[in-house]
Length: 417
Image (cartoon, rainbow, N blue to C red; front, side, top):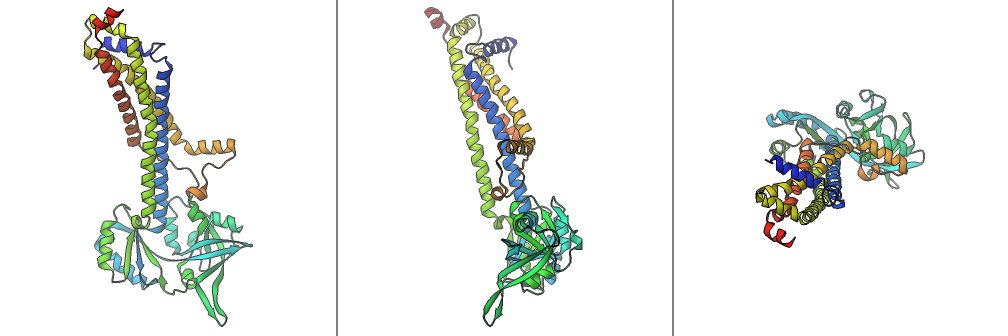
């Protein structure tokens, strides 16, 4: 593609102290591309990890398809679940069907109180869900009995309770009628286990209890508030959704995880796209610096270009010389930027903890970002795409200066010397 002469002249110009690689503008271009590529890789990896981790935990906790009833509680849910399992589409795609009894309460203990969501679930179902990255402290889930609780680790810390201590649950939705008016429903239960999902919203606001206990507390005997269906492929919900709509009687409402989290999923996608466009400007600015550097190099080497053209070097070769000079800056910057970006993306959490230790500030508040650790998902395709885009921009930036050099008239230049 490039002849030996073209490579030799290009790298000689690149190494020139005045206008080549030794110039300030060339160094600014290289460092700009390096920082732009590294920043893009790190940000896109963190955004990808944030997106997948958050969605995985939200969807994993709430089910991929959820069945409600417009009147509230669903009675005869076991019969309904058996009916779903007999459906061919559901049987092929659904891995678990979990009945849930859920309600909002205020949890109090030791003079402290906080809002919480109680979720009644069969302990065998909870144990299966907890196998995917959730840490359990205290009593094993399979040994939790009727009247015992499993609370989020952050919630137990907020209420200052330890395993075996009681938490009082107060609910205004199931008020008890008295001669003096309705009284909030208050029940006290011991906390026998706690869980840590790494997602602040759940760790600080959820309490699990056996399904029968929740039914008694919520005053919905032999009923549940909704039914969660978990699929082997969370992206393939359409077929199951349509089958359930046709299968279930009137009054039932079926939603998938996209509908239930539409605003959240859309916001994450928009944020990812906007961040990519904003950070891409760093690389574009660096590419324009390459244009400036090469234009000055062409002006500085006008006499050399004229002599080379006189010796028979073609216009095409002159273009290739300056394209190679400018693109080399982009390739070197992209190479080091990719290495730095990949290393930072891999070790982003230890780096965050080190910076926090040095500065004494919390750089990733769990209550704001809903995650206790900074996630990162490094995708080879994304890294290669960013590197290819940076090199392509560097190449495009060399075209005008190279064309300018190739169109230099040797007669005019040498006449003026």
